[in-house]
Length: 348
Image (tube, rainbow, N blue to C red; front, side, top):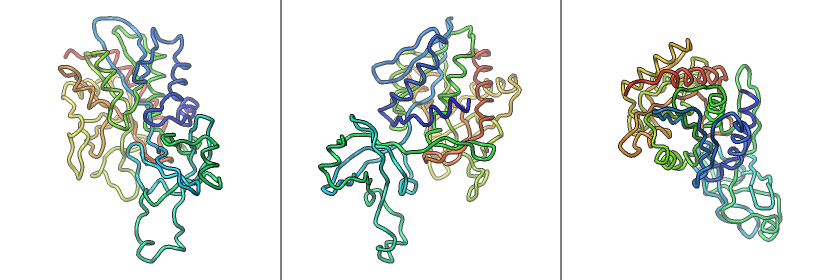
C-alpha cells in the first residue's frame, strides 16, 4: 500500500481540481470492478456486486491548498486559501502553480523578520501579508509564463519514510482513497457496493451530497483520517486516538471548544456493527469522540429520508499540513475492518 499511497499523495488535486487523483483511481480499478464512471460533479463512482442492499463507501479525493487571487505589478502572487489551512503552515513552503501551460515552482514569502517592527515580530503572520514568488521580474513575465487568476496551487512535497512510519502531504484523504482502492479490488460482496471517491469534501462535503442522492444507499461509511492526541501539547482528554493502535470508529464529531455532535452522531446499531466487524477481523480498533472537524458521513446521513451512516478514521498527525504522519499498519487494518463490515451487514 505504501507505493499506492505515494502515488496518490504526490498527485496534486485541491478541491475542485481532483483530476490527477481521479486518473490514478481509474487506472488502479480498471477491470477490477463491475463499473467505473465519473459523474458531472467530478466524483469517481465504482460499483461491485449485486443484491437488494446498496452500501456506499466514501473517501474524498481532494486536498487543501491555495488559488491565485491577484498578480501584482512586480510579479508576486496573492492567494486565497482553499479549505481549512492553518495559517502557520503556509509560510516558507515551496508550491506548484498549475497553469494551462504547465506547472511553475514558487516559494511562499513575507516581510523578513529583520525588517519587522518589534510588535510585528511578536505576532503570527497573516496570509494577507504573504505572497508567492515565482522568480519572474514583473507581472508581464508571470502572465507570459501562463499564470492566470484562478489557477490552483499545491504544496511541493514528496512522500517518504519517517522512522517506522510515513510522512507526506494530503494523507487527508489519500490514505482513505488507498484503502478504498484496495478494498474494491479485494471484495466479492453479496450486496451492491459503491466505492465513491468524492470531490470537494474540504470545501463543504459537496461531492458526497450529490453522489449519495444518485446512489440512494441503504447504509454508508465514510473512510477518512482522524485527529490524534499522541503528540506534545495534547493529551488523551483532548483526543484519545493514537498512531499504531488501529483504525478509529467515530462515535461523534464536529463542534468546537470541547463540544461534539455538530457533525455526525453515530447510532448505536452502527457502532455495534463496526465493533463486531473489527472483532471478527481480529484487529485492534479505537473508539473516538471528536470535535473540530467532520467528514462526508455527515452529509450522506442526511440524504433523502436519512441513511444509517458511520465514520472510520485512520489516525494521522498534523492534518491539513504538508507533513502529515501515519502508521501504515492502521491503514492495512482499516481494509480488513471495512471488508469484514461489508461481509456482515446489519439488519437496520
